[in-house]
Image (spheres, rainbow, N blue to C red):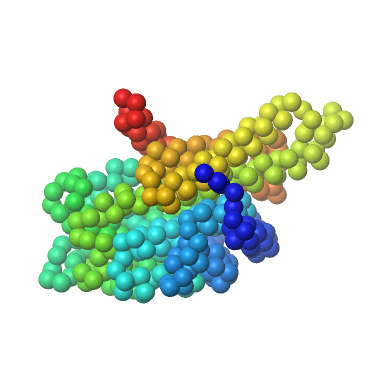
Length: 383
């Protein structure tokens, strides 16, 4: 295994960092304060090839592989994690599902737009009464000739308020809690009966619009099924691991920002006639941050390498997701502590880092769910 970046990947990292520093960073505090999604920056990312890096070239992407997604997402999250969440959600949860489950017609219709930034995608599973218990969804589709009639609602859906395309998992069987009881559909904004809420007001990741989707007799043709009827959960589970492990890049990207800002502040903040960077307990926090970040990044790279070798990464994906989210949360807490009173005011970004980090231990599968997966995989290996 060699986790060194290729020259092409290094060039991509430099491009993503330049974009994040020059385009995103100057407005990061503003869009967070206002709770706005920076649409122009999203379009710019598409123009630079930062949205469709792993999408095949024939569909307008860069054809680089999943490592490119991790590289880009770390650099964006290092500057503005909320925007990184939305970029990844459209590119990965939208693009990856279409790449592996879509018909040729569906790929040609949607993938070029996702890569260019002309289409914002979202993926919808969670419902008002259904979070981690995915098999308990209530939103349903009833067959009507060559069409399906969808009724129900989804909530906590990243990008829903601004999305153009919706990949939605709904029940298509009367059988309760069945692996074959759901189907994925591709819906579009403007379809009669489909509506979205205003962005929900959140603790953090405010530049990533999160909202509700309501379906009232939405009529959709069978050609809009993604994959096969009754295989919505199967398709979700097949691609969940790579999508889950790549979210880790967002997490250690934010932790990297905590580390860099903490070092810069500790070097210039003087107490008791000495920079606080010389204090042992500050050094301890810095040491813990860099240890967590390096382990999280390296382990994520290992998981991506395994996935691209065709290996199962259920264990690795949950480890990376769980560990990286906890590293981000603890790094943000430590950064605020190093900044002291200044860590609590908006003049410094570490208060935003802390607010943003909390989502990472909840969204995409809570830390508690990851522990259950890890225990299950451990029993398989050593039980």
